[in-house]
Length: 183
Image (tube, rainbow, N blue to C red; front, side):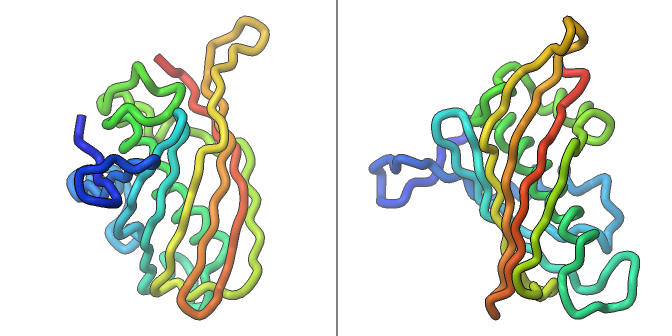
């Protein structure tokens, strides 16, 4: 396991932080087309089995529409996916997130695209966000293992996210995830 960075010298902080692992980030973004790789960096923290990330993004041009001049709903969702995938991968790598204790990175790569579902996604645009340079944060609020009616188990996760830019642009929201076909 990688040693976390700390806030002051060798004294451990209450929330250890894990700086961007560039090799892991490249692997997480590998399924995306080159012009759709928005996530540039992500610092992960974990407390009591729940993890969060602070991220930097850049979208030089939209992957599907003429320039709107602001972050739009499709890009919010793509940025969320990239932030979430990295946060889960880093959490698996470093044993940070409840529910994923038995996962390996090979498990994550196998499940990344077919088995991580967004069951619910809601975003609120407070002020226009500049897509060319913005930051985002995401946190896992809960992760529970469920097996409804004795069926196949899955992980149910409640998350929250927010984006902002240097000019006061703001967007936030919540998403519910289902990790199906879990080991």
